[in-house]
Image (tube, rainbow, N blue to C red):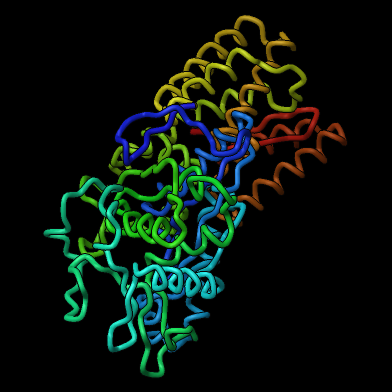
Length: 465
């Protein structure tokens, strides 16, 4: 398996620290608002990575954190007259709901910042003891970047000039020094620590949680892979790496992977631009699996231009898969198509090459329709085909729905209930051999653009396009 390492800036052969096992950590959301398309793109990229790793036989330990204490959360709680716990709980649940809707599987571990304070203060203590951190007069604790000879090696920057995130503090030793612990002297949210009441710095959280939950002793790296959005490489990941190496004497991650940005109609998604597209809004209009198929359709490292015209075209591409699935609906896969499985894994194991994977799927669908047209009763072929579709679902996360229900998306409950009621009446009429009534109901359904199919497993329907 080959992965692109953001630090080496090249594709590398993946070699885990422990044979057969992979430790993967991805920076999760700060839960003060609903998830947007950028969250979805990142979550999907690393969901695909875990699926491909598992399909290659690895046992994957996947952690994605929740930042549940932050100035943005505190401000939101104050504005709404709620507690920070209420805000964090609300938006954590919303994040889980939206990720589940697009087929993102839960991580193995989901540590929360508020539950990891002791691990954070312990790491700060190690850094102070080793002269890599210092306390200023107001109680804040800062990391001394000049004490780390490898600082900036992750992002390959020569300096921190023109970095707007650097805040001027008069007692900082160096302009690049960043806060590890923010002292709190008022009644706002704080936690006890050996340095006084306060809150952890954002960069500290991930380093501490990785050390607490994922590290295997006596290895040169804490974990195999660290991932996140491209905007996190500097300063967040740079600072994480510095904290870890200076506190623990081992490097943080052997490989660093970063996903690209989401643009909406050509502009980088940003709330300041007013085009932050919430995932929950997209899910009202489109099946979550359609969004997954679309957002996965370009390589994870590239920027993604989200527009509805491309989304609709992408849906039609996924529709073809489900129309094929209808042709073999009701069968069980008793034979494995090893040739297709091998081909798909070969391209996905090449740094998650989804373009080639989608091309293989398109080819499979075209060839399958031709083969079924020529001999629809070839049971062995249909079972192999079903196994291929099942493997697509396993490794790419789409194609697993009932094909008839897939084409029912978007109908309101009243319309669905009416159609189900008519189909039930039609079944009763057929059972009574009242074929005139049965045909009349079918005609009524046809006028509603409802296409029905009677199978041994029951009657299924969809809205005809």
